Image (cartoon, rainbow, N blue to C red; front, side, top):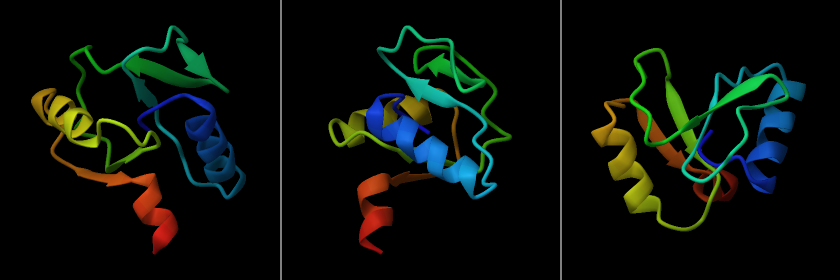
Length: 88
């Protein structure tokens, strides 16, 4: 999940309540290192993202910039905006 604000936290709680694993959070501004035992990584950190199937962006601002940052960081998987998931 990208974004460990209120929306991202609620999303993670709902996913976990349905036994959907949440591997980690990404966030540009968070000072948290984890939430409910889920690690929080800065978007600026270089990480191996090959084991992550999908990143759900929970914030509504800067979608293109966030996608570019994830792609520049080496992520090649699917990126979806939470708002689009809710619409479908």
